[in-house]
Image (tube, rainbow, N blue to C red; front, top):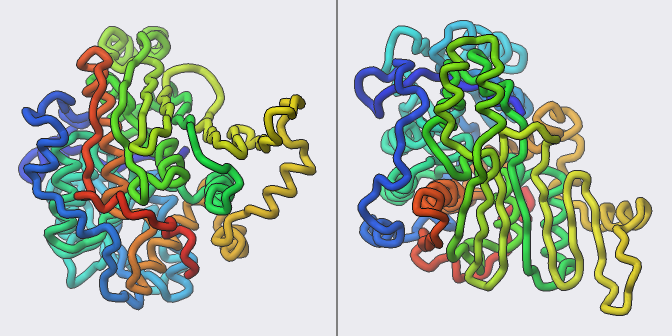
Length: 472
């Protein structure tokens, strides 16, 4: 999972922006004096951006801040869209000059015009200069988590649409500010959750739409990914910014890869909504052990500072009575898994590897997954039409996590081209991110039940077919 990030930052918009001292972010999950629902009500959220569409943009002018591994991947995913006249990369920014050089070389392979390069290595406010509506239509943010929200808020204020890497924000206050700013400025702010565009997840979603699962009851999802080596690598996460998160926070720090697809299955914000959650973390053992055993003395000194438990489990109830189990574990040595489990009255799917069970009634006692032939039959029948339509382009761009990165970027740019609402709106990204902040709150309060506020002003109550089924 290539997510080498961008930046040394230490204050929101003012001085010290590239100082490494505060790189991880000193955020307190209990910092708000208001209950989340009170904060939402006081913020005056209207839900006005739910189906928002803006004027068509024939060729989307894209500015990118953050040119590490993740930013580099997104540039690659834009190449097909640039070559076919749907987009142009007009500006790039990073604090590391070699990354800018690398991005320029990559872009030159598929775009004749060179983007304006903005070197932030000596100018702490350099990234702001690419947030100009006369130059760009869309700002893509591929920086460390801490700066997704402030950069998105600033860019929308300057008239740009925004696409930010996950999470959108990780405090209640910043999630609210994202919503307020999007509604005030009428600018799109999409969170780039690529797993919502993966072939397996789209296959399951199409089965749900076609009624193969019957009435949905329960889902299990996760981000299980052993990141210990990368967390300790000074270069992969520049200045170990992501490790710092685990020294300061405890909860589910990375909710969206698992939760995003499940919310699509369950029509969350499109007929159902998240109601409340309870979150608990296990004791911490694996990351501190790796830090103690490191040959780097500076890492040894951090071993006793790890705050985040090895495994966080969050149980979520929806307004329609469904249940969701969401897990987070990047400390434990075990294979990668997003679980992707979904149960209904007609079928059950388990991910990693993808398996399917069809319910044949209470007299059926085989209790076996569909065999290879049966699974293949269902896969061919229920492959998401979007995946089928884009198969040729996916084959050209499969280096982006098997094609899902390309499909994600393709759908974003083409929606802006056509002037239609986006597949995922600002409320989707904020809700999935907000669950992380609320999980921290529940853990900090001794695993107490925490209410999930309605961030749509009731718009979620209207059933809708998910926009990923629109053809374009």
